Amino acid sequence: MPGGAVRAGRPHRSPPRVRDAQRDSRDWTDMTLLQVMAADNAAEVRVRTTDDAVIGAELAKYGVTYGHWPVLDDAAAIASDELLARYRDEVGELNADGRYKHIDIARIHPDDGNPEWPQIAKGAREKFLNEHRHAEDEVRFFAAGRGCFYLHLGEEVLATVCEAGDLLSVPAGTLHWFDMGTRPDFIAIRFFEEEDGWIGDFSGDRISESFPTLDELLIAP
Image (cartoon, rainbow, N blue to C red):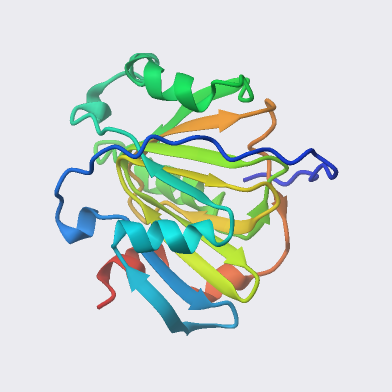
């Protein structure tokens, strides 16, 4: 994400309420994955799990909210405005206090018929790969596809591979980076308090280069 200043002194806000919908049974490669690694040694894997309860407990230790909404099988074929309408109840419940003034959808899908697609995909991915933080909570619901948030929390990095149906809220100021993979394919509903809430403040640390990519995480034993 482009650089920007982090505004200090914002009042503490309670994390958004999430609806923990029943998960459909899915192949393990489509399950949410959490891999916890030492921040100074990515080879030191402390936790690797697809167990929802364990994932929720590990993230909760750091104030990260994790939950689920229902999955629409045809999400990729639905226009963004219609998709927001289909999730009207869930969005309304999460934003009951009106905190989020700007709610939109980010989506990217492979387009092999477009000769420029490889460069488009590469450019989109690289915007998020370096460590940064935001002045407000980063709240994302994955309506389709997947992406990985790497949360640099003290002495650990929590790589959280989100899949369709996952809702994640990362507290403001949390150092992190995001990998959408070499073949990006996802739809995410985004929630912002301010119009420029997506702007990141980059730490300048090259830590992300020392950790496995999303693609590597998925094929690891």
